[in-house]
Image (cartoon, rainbow, N blue to C red; front, side, top):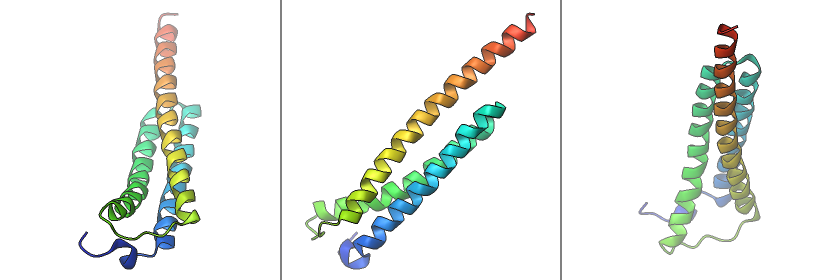
Length: 119
């Protein structure tokens, strides 16, 4: 970006963009995990992809701010921005855990189906 990012967007607006997109991702991740109970792994995967898009939006806003500071743009410390970064990091971890859980339950479901066929 050629113009000063801090001037273009208020740090609080950026922080809220990160928090809102990350929060949306968390809600979608929980929906994906709920799909496990009905063994709807295709829908769970779809939900994870949807959540990843929200995480990417949040991450882009964070990255633009950090890159602006790395270019020498003055970015004042913001407790809200620090909170937004923490929130995003936590939800990225939740996404990774949910992905692993869905794969695990999908594998168990496939094994159970094979066993049931052989009975």
